[in-house]
Amino acid sequence: MERLVRIAALLQARADAGVSAETLIRAAGFEGLADPGTQISREIRHLENQGWHIENLAGTGEPAHYRMTTVDNRLRVRLTPGQQAALRRAVQLADRSDLARRLGLPEPAAAPTPAGAALNAVPPEALSLVVDAVRDHQVLRFGYKGTPRVVHPESLRNQVGTWYLRGVEDGDPAERLKTFVVSRMLDAHADEVGSARRLPAARHHGLHPMAWEVDPPVEVTLAAPDHYVPDVRRWLGEPLSVAPGDGDTTLLRYRVTNREALRSRLVELGRRVVIVGPDEVRAELVAALEAVR
Image 1 (tube, rainbow, N blue to C red):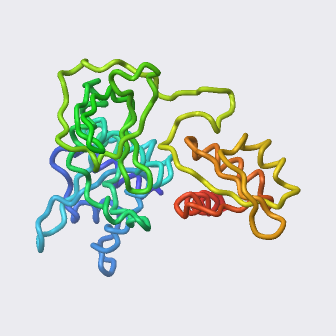
Image 2: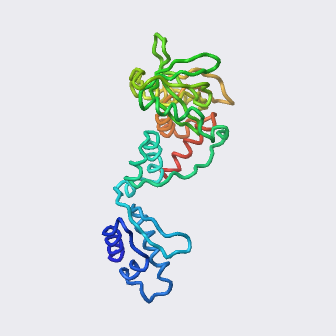
Image 3: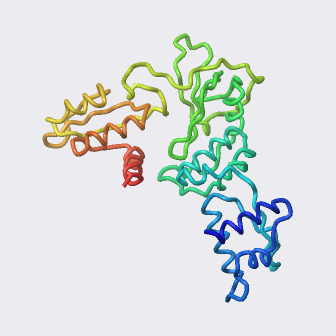
């Protein structure tokens, strides 16, 4: 620990010019040891694991020359890698790459493409325009399902590799919050900054969290033994439809707009219920359970 402190202090004192590997080797007391360059590289990795951002300024084949960028590394220490990646995506959508550098957030790693999401691996052409429109409260105009749309954007979300715009369509007397797949928007363009109405971040139409419009809607089918159906209704509310299943089971179909609420209630129900489909909802539940094992 004392050696790491000496290295960190030397790097911080020479933050502008950086420090040669030879100088760090002397400061760490590695002179005379076998392969001191590897030893100092290991100490640099220890510091990076603690949240410090250290880069080698030397070119290929040249002696190493390290520089430490002063960052607020408290987030690197306290957040999990998944939480860091989520935060970096948020600052990217907010067009604040400077904030990402100042916080020392890691570069985003290429995530594996979820099953069934291959067509959405490339960001939609209109994504950058939609990001700016959500941030700057701009009315969006685009073609969708053969109809011209004028939409006041509320939020932009990514679900299983697909980008969704949520907003209120101009002229809708009920001002219903609708969801649009960004990759299906045609000839999209935005009005001037501030032209869109400011909408609440989430619509809570009732006290039951399952009714909150947080995520793009998806229909989920569950199977439960007949004697457990009252428990499912009590936890999840009234389904869209009920049908007989195999044997002494019942199929219940729900329209889900709050996936986190669904997952928490399915955990409470445990073996009393089984997810019949879709596969993506089942995969999300399995991933959430594995994350807390």
